[in-house]
Length: 380
View 1 (cartoon, rainbow, N blue to C red):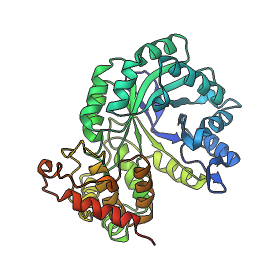
View 2 (view 1 turned 180 degrees about the horizontal axis):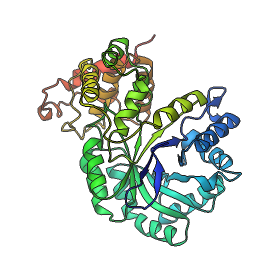
View 3 (view 1 turned 45 degrees about the horizontal axis):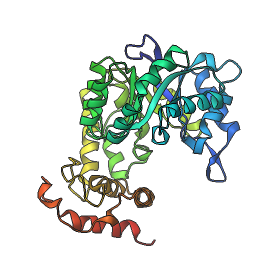
View 4 (view 1 turned 120 degrees about the vertical axis):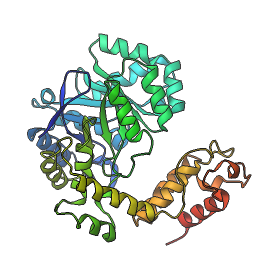
């Protein structure tokens, strides 16, 4: 196992982290974790060098923290850094920060949490937790020994990420989505470099883009075969991240012991600055090829926002492009249903046309939104 400094904290973490978000389940029910298999996986990972375990309040409908706590019995807690997250969307007053933390300590059956994050920050949630004095909560929790390091996970645009990093000087680390396809998405490579320049450790989530980069279309896999390397699609993805010296930990949400064993073997080779120019060119070619499959030429610049009807225009185009790109329309439909529940889907477009003059790509946005809705709601 390879280890890296965790930013300015003075501790060292395994480059591969165990993400407790996708445990094996029973009866195809996310809330019914197969505890025996999950505990076996966590302990196997720790026995083989993983020392960073990440969970969160809502994972597996609140059950993930409980199972992680059970797995860390019998001396395993002392071998790892434990990370979990405050469900900021449920925090309505200052006291809620403390209430949720105390509940999590109880569920995990521990006396402290090493890495504690404000979960899934965006512009709105950032303003909310500032108003509720999250900084006072962090200071008190650290003073009481309930947490060691303060961080946040992030889902918004780069300028919001930079604002969050800059407006609180006591961040120890952050967690961002990054993979070789998402270099300009959300915080992206720009955010990785910025956070690192400020001394923050950077934890990576979605290294396989929700599993999409593990199951690439054949015409894309053929590009990898042009290389002399016999790496799997998963290994290419993890090697790309491991090559970046600014990356502290790569989280993988593994669902089976087989996946864990594969990732552990790969993790032995995740050393910074070891990919060759040819390797990087192959990955660049894969990226460009996948991007060429996109049917809507949206760059995700966000100039079309805010939409008066609440439509997440770039988000709708993104999930549609990825459904086509990765040949997985069913997964796209599932995400679109979530968009509908969140009231940000293409179906809410009233064709007011306000977005048309703002789009640098001159896209016919209303008609394209109709297309997205039609394709994702088509039967069969």
